[in-house]
Image (cartoon, rainbow, N blue to C red; front, side):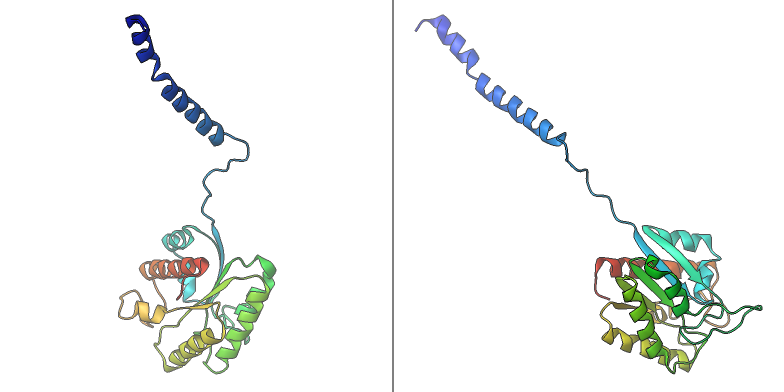
Length: 223
């Protein structure tokens, strides 16, 4: 072999490696742009219905609270003064709001994945547990996957018993998540004189608290 051919061989030696790299790059590009290739999945916006009474209604009056609650969620608010769970609601300013059960039933299967219930300040604890059962049966039959039930602030003894009924019901209903607002908000300066209703700061804190519980419920995390 002469010197010229030796030099030529050395120059051509890398060519198979270069060819391999080019072929690999073309294959990667072809796979990336092939028909049927899907983009990264988008995060699902969770549909939620929030049924509450006048305490929860502070969110309706506070734009910041609504923005906080709806981040990553599609929220329907149904918050009415004087609402009760299943017994006839009390009248307010000449009208009587539908009960939580009536409001739920009126929505049919459009309730969404998660139902939030914050109702109980306008009634006694007697029979509340049975009311929870009625709500749960209706919610599950309407396609709801999880129910987040917010505990009452225990400013009265009857509210403590209502909370016991809520926690006891959670043992009967695996899809019921108890959101311990009473414990979370204890000793916080978010409330007016009755210790229940809130201004803008409290409403936003309630919204943040509810949102975190909804996201955990939607993802299947334990309470």
